[in-house]
Image 1: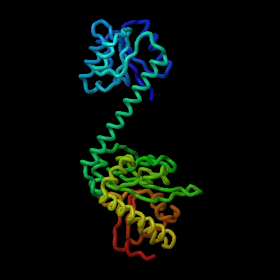
Image 2 (image 1 turned 135 degrees about the vertical axis):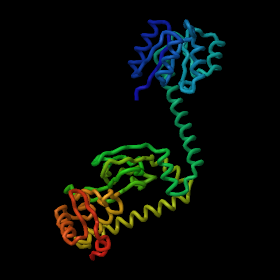
Image 3 (image 1 turned 60 degrees about the vertical axis):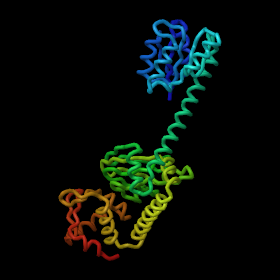
Image 4 (image 1 turned 90 degrees about the horizontal axis):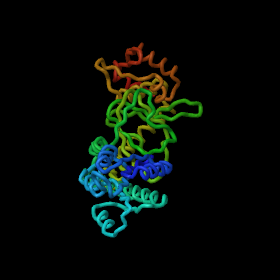
Length: 352
């Protein structure tokens, strides 16, 4: 990201020459011809560093530093004095007021660039340390000891994303930096075989987690994730989740139990795909979607036939034929994309 430098200097030739030098060094340069205008520009633009002359009309450099130090939004911006004055008392005064550095005119290009880069780096390090300290305090105070509390923590501290039907949430091979909590809608995780056939590995409704990968290794996502309808998700960086888990042993055990249950469900799905009859696979898949998806007022669930077939591990045409049989038997009702289960007991008792 290009860094912004504010140069406050009343000497026009020096101001223009210095601005050009900084632009050639890939900085975005803002300028002001006096202290009063410099304060206004700083408060409006929030630059990454300020270079300010001392002796200026209207408001000198000391006045600029004092004005910006009184504002919480600008007091932490690195501030470098630039002046021809070399007396020790002037340098000491500027530093005592809170300046970060002091350059005397004339200066070498390397001196100026070095001072800017050093102050920006220092500021960035301090901000990261402060953010980590605040986050650690937040985690400690939050006392996240259960899955329910973890969901509330993610909701309060994560980043919100909105997806439309069919939007990709992440793709296989992407960096696995985020864990997701579904707030609204539904999402699926899925794999593709060599022929491009899709196998759904998980369906997630509101209040479900997904996106877990290794906390110790930089392993990319091993599957795709896609929105099954317009959805709202909250993400939390896995490093932040790791920090929460490190401070809460009870939560770790509860999360392990949740992941173990998810693994058992996937194993059961694979067994049904391998050994179950077409009717049983279709029935089990319908029951899974009925559990995960919200029914409308008429009791219908909205699901794509291709998604049903993918979870069941069969061709879409085979699934459609089986659904038609269920419809004729009075087990379900079908209208366009909507399916309504009429006889839940019969559907559950369909044999392998």
